[in-house]
Image (cartoon, rainbow, N blue to C red; front, side, top):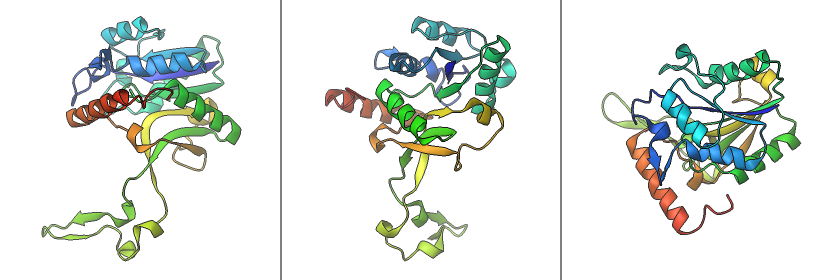
Length: 235
């Protein structure tokens, strides 16, 4: 079985109810559900939630909610891994073997079926255990500055103080949109941020981590502009 899990708990603090908050006419959660269904890669697209309203929204857009997530896996400090493993184990307890799994985060309106298919294709060819969406840092983190207790500035990494930005190695950050995994490797807690992974590099205009109201407003601006210029078509 090829499983897609979208983890969407109901207890968001910084943006209340953000997983089902309207975003350009649809609940935010609708975007990853639609992308996962349209890509045709999965036998089941499942939303893992402890929240009945989120479950209803998920079902209305075609996702499955075959179980409710245990409360202990829906806390502020709950990591993603135990939530995904819970979903994999649930299916395996029903006698269904999960051969491939993907996690798509709920607040990802820039994720599309085309991107998912591209990433999956690259992953399968690579033979790696994981594939995760990443984006190149817009500015070299090796040249980062920090503020001292005195209020003055200094280099975070003094050894790179005199190095030209173009001479520094490219670096990437986890874009927090989606990843593919070998379930057996994932359950062994082998780190994803390691040589077990390959990157799927997103363009910067599609990498938006929506955690605060400012993030939300910026994502709306980008989405509206990209829609207006038809730059989301075919993504």
